[in-house]
Length: 293
Ligand SMILES: Nc1nc2c(ncn2[C@@H]2O[C@H](COP(=O)(O)OP(=O)(O)OP(=O)(O)O)[C@@H](O)[C@H]2O)c(=O)[nH]1
Ligand SMILES: [Mg+2]
Ligand SMILES: [Zn+2]
Image 1 (cartoon, helix red, strand yellow):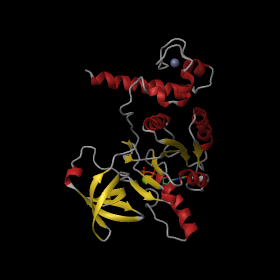
Image 2 (cartoon, rainbow, N blue to C red):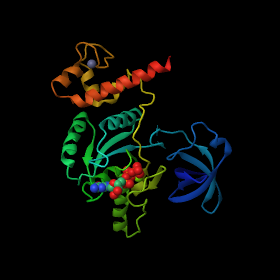
Image 3 (cartoon, protein in one colour):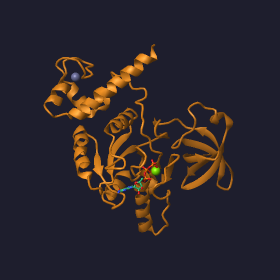
Image 4 (spheres, rainbow, N blue to C red):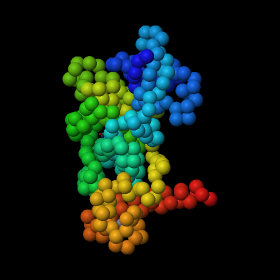
């Protein structure tokens, strides 16, 4: 029995990375019927049946998991947005941040296409997120600006690239891989050149035991399993302020003497991000009410 990590699955086969080599595997029927299923990033035990071939016998317990994109055992999530085509969807970013925080995954905000003419205003907007406590950088897969910084952040970690379709997730991964190829003299492993929509998640082995996960884009996201009392825990700028709210368990909505609301009024906490928080709170409330109808 060998231990490995599921890189990708398609055509009924499972591609498992075992000590630096790829095995093409089948899976035991009982595991396929498992409601949780097997997902990219899962640690597995395989029995070897031939040359680089095997059968997945067991899925090991997960450290964490995202539903969208569907990847397990993640260290950090590069939340990618673009300065245009498509323009940033800040509400979607806030939702991705909530899901990352809930699942104990370090988020890194990455605004791509910083080369576009109107990028400046979006780049400045990132300050809101930096002040909230999130790492945020502006990059360009096209000009390679900032790519070196991204590379340093990702070394030795399992990093998932997540975000809407067309923001440049695959392009960024390609430029990181191409850089390696230049350094090591290897031929770069292409994910398919621009304008190819990514159809399934895959983990790509990378430097120092790290992996990069390319995933399909999405524009809708549910903040799954988040209760309205819980939501503000995933906003670092609110967690910090909540000590001074009059009520314990204040969700910073209608309560009197709310420190968060005071900081919003004072311009310390971003008004816009706070309004999106209220919007999300409503969305969760409506979902909770429908549940008990
Ligand atoms: N101007 C500019 N265009 C870019 C940049 N990065 C990517 N693009 C273009 O944006 C388009 C989409 O890039 P992809 O890398 O396929 O985007 P993706 O996020 O992987 O999209 P999905 O796989 O559909 O989720 C392509 O036409 C790229 O050439 C950039 O830094 N600047
Ligand atoms: Mg892609
Ligand atoms: Zn409050």
